[in-house]
Image (cartoon, rainbow, N blue to C red; front, side, top):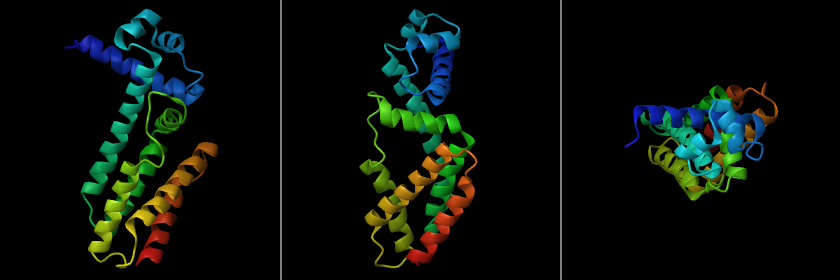
Length: 189
């Protein structure tokens, strides 16, 4: 069982890794750079994590845990179409509020061999499809709405909002998310 000091050091290394990957990308982040940013030796990093991939995976998991906690809390308080809107608002809100986490997710998915997630993972699609099914079953959407097709479209639009914000930090993700919610309401009701 790790001590409180060891847990604190691991948390520090995860935070440093998120920041470094956000600034320098996966390729530009090394164990030596992580150690230097944390003010410890490379051997001390290796005491807590057996490899760069391990610390990157821990950083990615931390970011995903934070995102899913926020999204889950937002969705849990809503039902029907409002749950899908809460899902979209909470994701873009979290990523807007935590830009380093956005970069960590993108770099983790695109560059890190330790991260096996993909933008089109069935679990991601199925989670959104379940929200759409619930909205359809509640009568918020037409009976002929196909949850899987709609989930693919919703995730594609969400990814486009995030990508646009990464290339232009002044891009208004809140307005874009509200436009997406309005479009979905008009198209699916």
